[in-house]
Image (cartoon, rainbow, N blue to C red; front, side, top):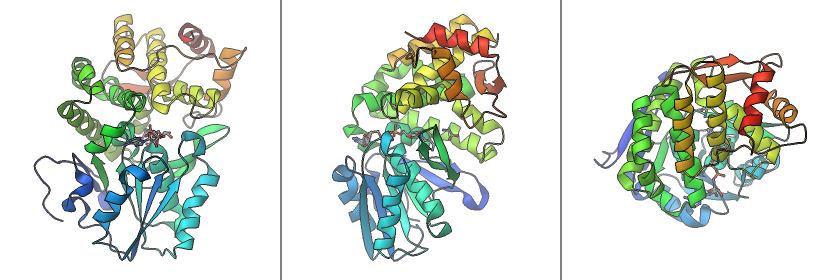
Length: 369
Ligand code: NAD
Ligand code: GLY
């Protein structure tokens, strides 16, 4: 592999023969060293969407040209609402129409939706072809591109169909964040905020002190936030790749959040917005269970708000609590219909626990505007 420049950070995911590097830095799309040493193949397919492809696909094509005889491209329709079977099939259509073989390498160029779908396509096409994550949203750089969770939504539940399948490499070009809309930047901050309460309160302190710099896209602040988030995620995934225990802590705020996303209709609330609000709800539940105090809930709520994220949950139905509970019962962490929540215990650590419906109902009612 060519030597990477000093402005580039490298974080390694340690998973034995499935280990891979995450490269983080500005201008990586155009840096030859980023692309050296990938699996050899006759062809590559760049999977992107109708928003991101016009911005960055040509640059990626140019970077890959020395490595593959042909570089194809497919642009999916944009949006969480398209994270489904029909759109997934467009990737298989492109692969088959272009005569792809078992060595063809897929490059996911886009946010978490493109990354999750491309990874799932790579996991299942010809029973598995290599893929590379090229995340272009803050959320996908700090979370979804790392760790090998891939998949699509089902109308009855978020991310219900998928596979664990690790990429060959993750390339986070921080320059791509320049074109990201502010609402999407805030959505990414939700997943950055998440890492503090579950694993590293010193990082939480740092995010508190630097959230305005992050919102203003200060390059040094973003570099640190992406790197530290990837380090924490690498540490968790390295211990529990397939979520038999510890990895579930990465779902802090997600049980409530997934209910908001599905209940409002996919795409209405951004994933990161739902996670931000969901973390506030999960912190309130932790407080009711006695594992954190009111001051912690207040601190987290203030930070989520400063990041530009909603802290008031939406009403989903006239039987509001009933609808939330119904949606949360199809969460992947539920066991025999019993919902399990990630609670903070104490700040800097997290664990899974069931909770009485009545208590959860109180949290939902207290959180809805
Ligand atoms: P997204 O993929 O929908 O991207 C957000 C929007 O930004 C889209 O409209 C996209 O086209 C646009 N965009 C992307 N990059 C851009 C750029 N550089 N400039 C301008 N516009 C750009 O959303 P997301 O927040 O990246 O990802 C959310 C998805 O990730 C959800 O489906 C969620 O379930 C999934 N997720 C997966 C994991 C995992 O571990 N696999 C973890 C967290 C989230
Ligand atoms: N985003 C949750 C996970 O990767 O496990």
